[in-house]
Length: 157
Image: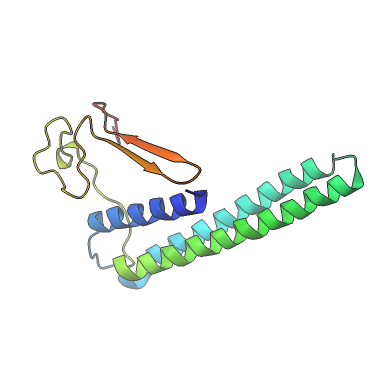
């Protein structure tokens, strides 16, 4: 599985999960979702610029001219790919805004809203998170393993 695919799946799952927590709200006209998407695009582009500066610093230290040129060529290709990824993510976020609305995302995190994974009261048949469950997702070059463990992570105090 390549990183772009994993990132897109992660973003899609995040957007879908967020959508269940975001109410219809009455801030639709304010454009909070679109503003957030635009700011995240700015941040992504800034990251591309920063990574490009690091790459240039590496390339200027390559002593052989052909190798240095190859370094700069590789850097340009990776910068183009990273910039396109930023734009693709922005498009996906804007599409999510169209589905979820423009309300602010500020969910109330309350422990009583979460199920006990050791003894789930209403398990999701499509995503059963019972302690001990194990999945392996394989591609030609990679294996991603998911294990449900009996651990608690503190969120928002």
